[in-house]
Length: 277
Image (cartoon, rainbow, N blue to C red):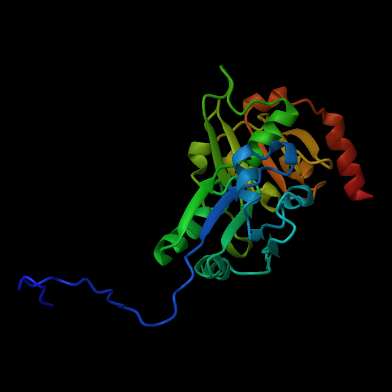
């Protein structure tokens, strides 16, 4: 366009590259550790994230008291996994988180314990990254820490536990877990087995066959930190029999430091009698 003095004046025009309707901004996903169950063990950061949720996708082990802390209008979706009974596959959960976020919603994926300790949080994080969805991680108190604390049995202890190892006792289709038994059988370390109750017999046998002493103290904690928590103190040789008295979510903990656990052998005998009656 020419101006009055003959010089050309540039005009700035807005160019619309996408003529379609304006998209809603992408939401975000929070992978939040709900801790072992006691709402008092929920972190402040986890609480703040939960209070912003528009959708809460939660595990079956998350307590009702913690779920109640989410906004009343937030949609709650249970994706409980109990042994072989899964309400949703992991792939379906991944797609669900991404889909809600792409709708512009704030999604809290609420997990028992810590998202990155046998919680498959890494898979959900990868799914979000692949879809271009922001994903934030809020760590939680894992069940092993709560179990040791409630029993008064430290997972590491000078002179008796210079290392602690977390392993899973659960393999696909009920198979025995493929673990480095020789390494786990070394003395003066604590071995925490998640999801190992049904495999207690095989786990104890493998550890003893690899050289771990049959007299090594052991602890089983069912429903750690909850009102219905039960603790059983045993030895590695008696681990299978002690496990047979329990049926809820439980941790197996093997190591010399478990000698400090507060439950007595009479608890084992009582629970076994209850299971046999």
